Length: 298
Image (cartoon, rainbow, N blue to C red; front, side, top):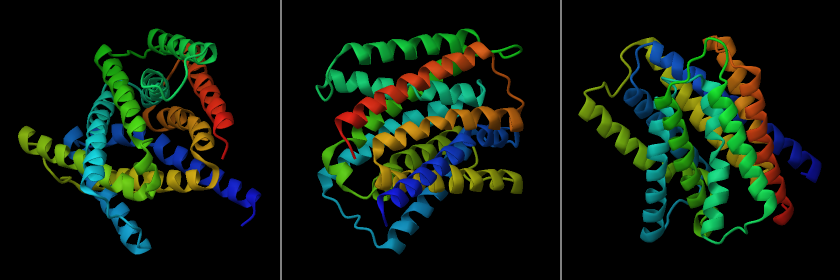
């Protein structure tokens, strides 16, 4: 396969990721309307999604054995995703899906700040400017959501908490031994803590473990297969072909998909100022990734 074919395939894989992750907010909100609780939805999506991923690992005969210390590290990192998944899923109850997606992309800024603090990245004026742009964009999104749109404070806090913990999760993924593994294997292990905790939440809350109607089951299947399995595997394949930085740049298309999916499926409406705020956030993130791409070319 020549370089052009590899880049084209990588681009298409990441676009598939954008489409499948982009429809997740609307599908999640529709599942709530069908009567699914957050706990039941999460357990079903994660469990069936993990089953698809581990089946892929076994069929492709990927090496998945790791030492106990590294396994412990991945499970600990997966605990950060527990908080991220719960708070993100809860935020969909209070905010339009496109707003949640925009706020979630602030995780890139969280990663930059953390990596500066731990010494992985250097502090400079360009990064400071990008972080300022994301803050201004955040203000525009929150304070000018659009006519008839009420942004609940609890939803905003939940979405920002999700972004923070996803940033911690992303930093964990950058650990040297973890990067050396197949991405599917990493995802498979890191899904174990969220599955365990979502199961416990179902037991404690008394929510059903499994969907109770065929409509609920359909939404769980769609979320598990498309928004977890297909999205995760496609992103892994995209990174293999074009590298993580370029894949992250293309992946900023995801909130655009979430925006139009929200309009088509949920009748969401967002103001032009909020869209400008989203452009500021995504523009700063693209610049940050372009800068990192120049520093670490594929």
